Length: 327
Image (cartoon, rainbow, N blue to C red; front, side, top):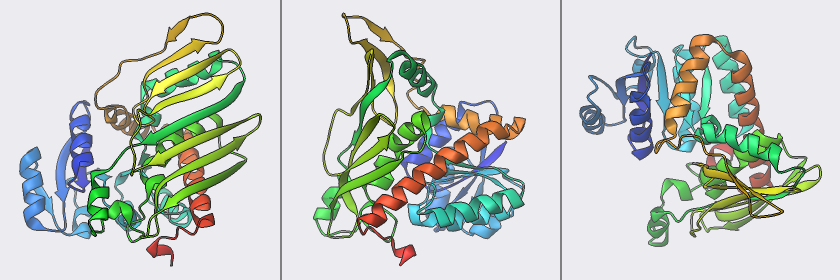
């Protein structure tokens, strides 16, 4: 399957490296707004087809699918352009700014007979399956805490008076949308959409959240999600049950999952193979679902994507975090 890329940042580099480890994805095209940047990126990855016109790229026969890693606020326009060109789309998280965009895009995807995926890499990793198995071992869940607290170098630029994309409403930024969606997707992937959610953000002068605490209510327990781009943590995640505690490292990578028994010192290691670039698993999954037309898996992923965005949109609006595209 031939794929192109939109975006020239480190995350695109990582996806290309992951795709090259599959037997089915071939990188054939690059887009950037400027010719110099597009050509430099294409030379870096040995790609011949360079585009600075999005419509032209979407109409090209040189790609069957596209990976989009543009700024959050651009996702909707970019995704729709390629869906209308009948290209499968892998869009980096958060897939859209709000549910209105989500619903329109998935309608267009269905009309054009193509697949649209949110590249939420943790949901595709084998360790997510191990964590599901671990939840079954710890008994009735009592509570959980899922942190993703990671200091951003771009915060230094913000403090110096600049306007990095991730810290602006213009680009649909903020800690919840950038990092909080990872642990939120784990909670929704494991337990479904919460019955209630409340967010307690630390708001920046730019109008977005630099950090925040998201509390999810489920029958019998609550989940606490900590997200921040202005602080740092070791990011150990814990799910507490009657019979034990499920522990894993980092909500994005979910490394080294294990169960600690409540009685005794028994530790049950759950780890699958920890690939250093777990985007490999999402790349393989995208292709498998498309080639086998696995609509069951596709609908499950769509539901998680919808529910995560529904929670995120609702709690940020409750706190007055409104993106420019919504004003």
